[in-house]
Length: 186
Image (tube, rainbow, N blue to C red; front, side, top):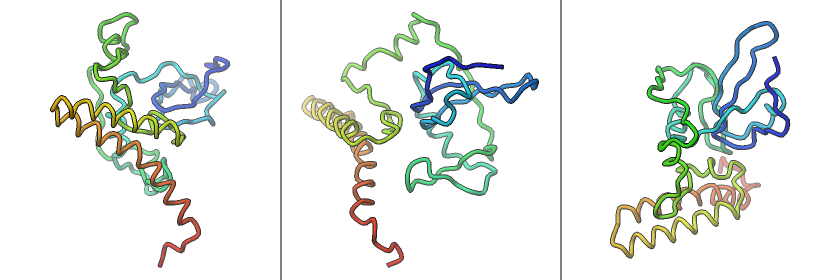
């Protein structure tokens, strides 16, 4: 009945959790967090984390569901929330990566160019902390510059595009602060 470990928090995306459906139900739900979910602290239990493939989960997140309303996972960015996806989502060939396995080591190893940043900025800083995201985009641009000097234009463009993605939440919040009291209908 109780799956709680003190001190474990739902403070970031990519956590794998388990929750009980209730007393005497003998059923549970496995969840993968796509955002921080502090409201689950003390009610469900974190049992693991996604070490590779978070970009796949972000793509699945965008699938429409049978729910009519949409939510704002990110401020002013509508996504489908809850409900059953309108298309089948089949996950195959996945499982637990054993401690010390070559697959796990490959997931955890630092990339040769130093880009350990996730594809989506929300997976790096779910609260969109300005300094954290700004530092990350700056480092990504530096990595892109190194690729450019090596005439690896495709890799450089990839890093610059990723750096831009890390700036977008900051630009959005800056825009909202600057034009907070403007009537959007004008």
